[in-house]
Image 1 (cartoon, rainbow, N blue to C red):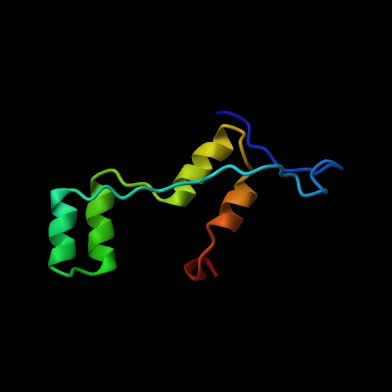
Image 2 (image 1 turned 30 degrees about the vertical axis):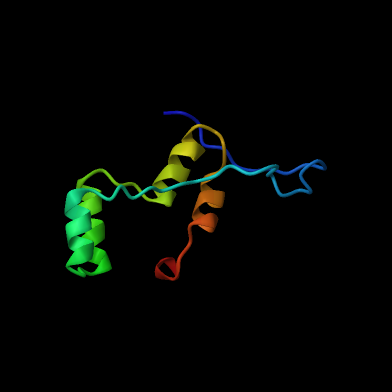
Amino acid sequence: MPPLYKSTGCEHCGKTGYTGQVGIHEFLRVTPQIREAILRERDYDEIMSIAVQQGFHNMRYDGFKKALRGLTSLEEVVRATATLEDE
């Protein structure tokens, strides 16, 4: 397993441990099944269930992959993807 990184900070980054930006992304492909669920006005949970079955990954997943590559830290991914549901 690759090492996980923790930001340490320096003068260059203002002691934050981060310089520049790395995007974390999610992309919902509107497949025929998802299009049908939207047109039938299905709720969010049902649409997301279909999307996950078809391979959808959210921003936190993408962030974790980037943390494993050493592009960011787990703490920053969790901070950047926090929602009210996490609290």
